[in-house]
Length: 356
Ligand SMILES: [Zn+2]
Image 1 (cartoon, rainbow, N blue to C red):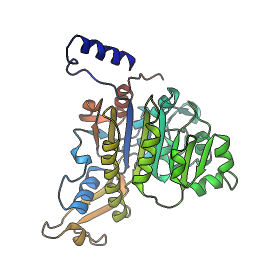
Image 2 (cartoon, rainbow, N blue to C red):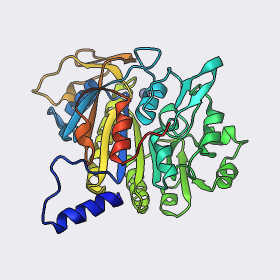
Image 3 (cartoon, helix red, strand yellow):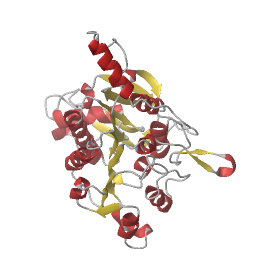
Image 4 (cartoon, rainbow, N blue to C red):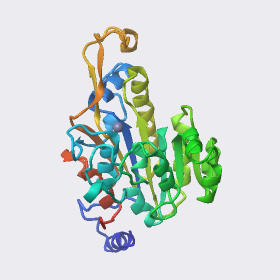
């Protein structure tokens, strides 16, 4: 970063503009992860909400690619292997969280982008509408062989390998935290220097914050509070926002797409131009739009029990998912790519090199 500034100053002193095509570094990275947000789900959600195609903000982002999502051991990934590939750059077996299969069934940890950020003193945050220990958020801070190992995931959340741990944790799972920590998680979180509560006002305070609830919460206040907090760090930040958009319940899943899309738009308003913003999915899902007339708003035509407009096969599917990007480093998001390349794109945008 200092080198970049020195070069920029030097170039300016010579009265030259910056060399064309020279990659600029990002100070911050925001990764929006639409869990199960395949192209067909995004498309249907946008038309259902706005009655026109290409109405999502995500669909206006300048750089896109299609990302393979296969796991190391199977063609169709779960969230654990899917998120591991994106945040560590390594494909692993389904159910493994930021860990690779090693000799004798051992799980070998692999360092996540958020751990690189913690090691370098950047601010870090996770916002999710799922339990904070679930596979997708956990891949940022924990390394376990089995995604169901809730106790170990919470233990690692409070005992980080790098830095002082994730600065802002917002999600569900308060009852889970209490259950694995002897009935009341507050003491364990306090011992790890966290304030634990259900009120977003904790995020504005200097202490690291875990806002864990068991009910749904409004996405925008959580995003805004987190961005305001993380932006205070002069070194920058890495923020991961996961919004579940599985369409087992199609109405809820499709509504979640609109919620995340609004968050992606808001992040573009709030974050500086030195922020790489990405949207992708860990895997696709078996939702398809198969009908619908333009004469009537789709929301009036669509009944989940009626299979003439939208059908849902309730399973993850193996086709590529979209990556949309803007900001420094976004120009590398193009063509078909393995999901692991997202890690390299984020790491190099921040000016870092892989060290394991
Ligand atoms: Zn998933």
